Length: 141
Picture (cartoon, rainbow, N blue to C red):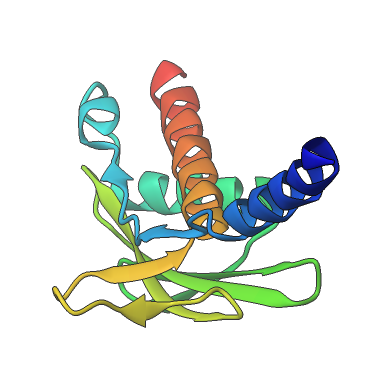
């Protein structure tokens, strides 16, 4: 009799605890390129721009210039979520910042930090790695 009661109770508790898993994390603002780009003396801001645009295309982000040394990139995930980032760059470095998002749970916490769906950080980390790979390809030439 006890086992019949405990088993459904355990299933309910497991289902409830799975729903409590944290799905948000701090907003990631990756940046890099300085050590990679500086390996080649003639690496220019245009080379950095080219590496960023190629990485965006490879990762299926739509990218375009919004001002000198700033690219806006946008991606849509499963037709429901949208992420827009700004990529500020120079010949020696770049950094990626969140501009806007839809259905990603972006919010400001009481301590002043921002949180967002964990998949945002994965998307931005993958973009960052692709940019670094393209910088490396350029410096290797």
